[in-house]
Length: 214
Image (cartoon, rainbow, N blue to C red; front, side):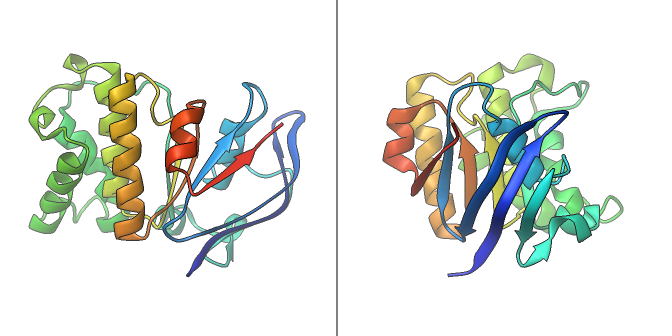
């Protein structure tokens, strides 16, 4: 089993430290839940792993490489992240947004070939949102947008996927359906998924491991 993420004595935060001496190893096909109260630094931790925030200390390696040594283009082929904030892009449809996930793989001047089209269609189908493909972003619900953002990230095809509250805005049935889909994709495609969540019943059912931040 391949080690994708190795964290040793990691400290994260902004002006003040939120998490210190954090350790975690994640292998392919794992689905690891990060749980804890609001304000304990779960989102900050995920952003730090994604390389959006610099760590305050410690060691963070992706596929054996120090995250601080990676160029943005290289990092984009190794790790992707889905956050819960609302997207500001308007004037485009769902399929176009999902297709943007292919840019790190193919580059802006090579996007749009048949392989990319198949990948986009595949991710829409996996999230059961093919019927939304031509819909403008302004016309879909918050829950639908969350699924679209996950499809966009899956289209990026990174071995490590980070997700901050992936079931936000979804009702219970949709939450369970999404977790089941993510678990299946993790196992079938050997994707490691690290996510934060407050849905403890579903976390216990679908996560392979639970890591508590206090």
